[in-house]
Length: 592
Image (cartoon, rainbow, N blue to C red; front, side, top):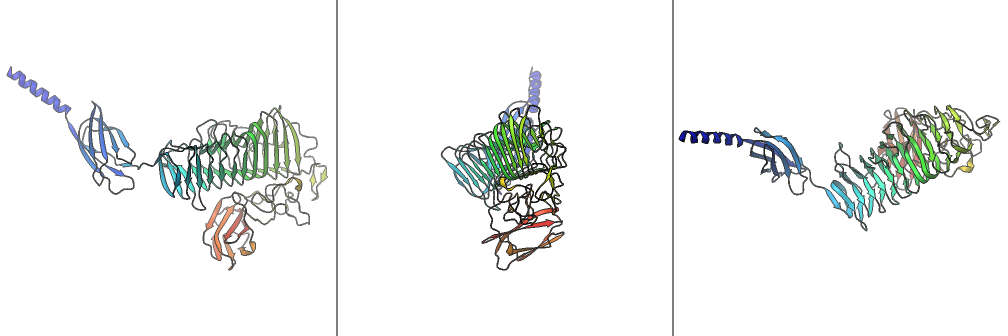
């Protein structure tokens, strides 16, 4: 009997010993932006073979060590004012070290109001501006949203940066995306950058102000949204903005989806947009209601999307001084510039607009209702398909006057007016034209741009009666006597030939001309450019700006003589702008 008891005792001791085997687990946990890392709680929660809990605390260097019973553990790290981190499924059957962990400081969360000073702020939970309150973000404020977090402004959101010190809305981690901004109160975005969101950068439910800001690399996960701006029930004015590389996987707007009461776009650049699906029929700008008015704006380098898609109950589309270039629509034989597909009659008015080197047709009319198309002083060049492609059910009233249609696949696909495009007379310049002053000549664009060269038949070939703006796409005076024959007649296309700029047009305007204060040589330039400023002129900044509005060179404190290496700049037309204490001087620069 004693022998049996002894054997039983030994057996139980062995089994219990197996169950009670231990391992020493060590590691290091750091606190973000701190040098003292003590008192972080390290919680060990065993998940197999049975539940068990133990804990340790870090020392000032962040080191910890704990003897635990063997098993599979979830190890969590926590400290007040920091985001909890955890490592699941850690094998603790033998002694060893866990990988280093850094706890991120908690950021903004919940309701915010008042003024947020310049600085970097992590947004670690959803934030909102409550009704009746205002949140103002000062220049230099950067909100960094963690994955899936968002900002809802029921009250007013004022995000106003300054030159060189924008307000940023961005992601906290370049590998993740945040959920954008929804604004129902009166809000303003001025000199702001909104980027890397996944649920429309801004969804606007009210009359918000968008000016001099950049929306880039945004997308949307909703089938009714725009990658950059989703306009739901307002008619905002979007002025002096840059939209770059925004996308949508839906047939909506890669940059802007407008289903409110109309939309006005002035002095903007849209570049590099895409609808990421097969056979798309949305646009860079999608409008479903009201009136679209676009002036002094560039649409370029879009892929797999139309430029403007006007549908629904849109009544009118107005374009003046607009440039559509290098937009390619893959696997779809339809227009890449403008598509009209409204349920009611629509009127399209295009003045001094240049459409060149895009894929497929320039304009597609496919609504079954009667539509009216007015094109005056426009250039359509090198479109592989039609200038106007019309569906069989679409009724169109045309009025095409003083335009240049050159090197396109055809003029109008069906029901073209008799003699349109047939030379029957000569215009005031002595060039052959049809009865409405339309010509068909090489526009002679300057290399690297879509500006006119000397000798272009488009110079002084327009009609002044429809021009409503006093400057062209880049701010040069319009109307100008480009051929110097004594008759001041507008040119065809978005650019006025041989006219001195008084502003940069795209993205900047309302500057004073002071060209006597600045000299450029050589001009045209090849490898080196010299900029000479008057000794009496106090300059506060010097910029070189491309025709698409991109600043390719800047100097906040220019000397009276500045030497610039131009070998890294593409050939083409640029604007040199020098700002002073009392005036701004601008001149045209040609790089060859």
